[in-house]
Image (cartoon, rainbow, N blue to C red; front, side, top):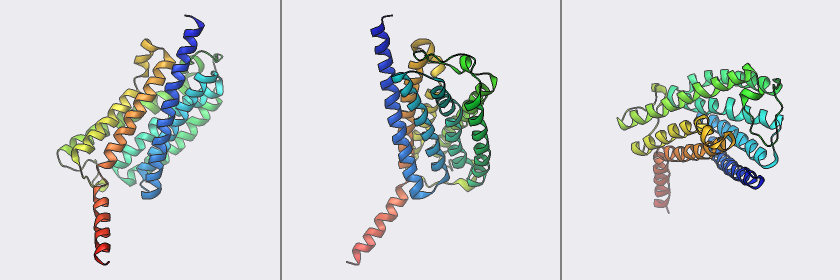
Length: 264
């Protein structure tokens, strides 16, 4: 392959990663704004998760633009493979299991996140990271960081997918979309909330598909594509699902405005 072709591929990968970073950042700001206004714990969990997605995408963007090094790969591996899906799943735990269960899981997750961060940042590398070659955890790290990545992404992804599909099914049956009676939500549009949950499950599946795509597009292209497509679907699913539960607040606001107007 010619040098020009390689540079062209790197430029496209960088553009894909950069776009994913911008979308993940917009997602982070959106959930942060909602958390600041409403102080719902699942929205804080989503904010942390999407901040980690943005960090992982930014590391890939940087590496595709300027070259890989060990520190950038550590941050990419930590944010993109170990931590982000776990914090995203915490939001699902809050929505399905209620605040008490969510708080317990959050305490464990905080400890595990600190432990995983220490392991990944100090783990010895088995091979040198080459600037123009996409490194993998298997090539660079030993067993511990790779085990953390497998557990931190695999189990939480199943929680997210199960939770999203369970909620969609329950909503369509006009039942409480949570597993706990203490986690009830006010649903305005059952169809819209179900669609949002299906999109969230789909986005999670796409983000887990980088290994399958790697054989067709190469590791860096696979991660760039799955990050962009997966985060975009997650963001869209979040917007659809969120808009399905705001109607009552909007109706109350309209009532208050109408009441105020009647006193004019």
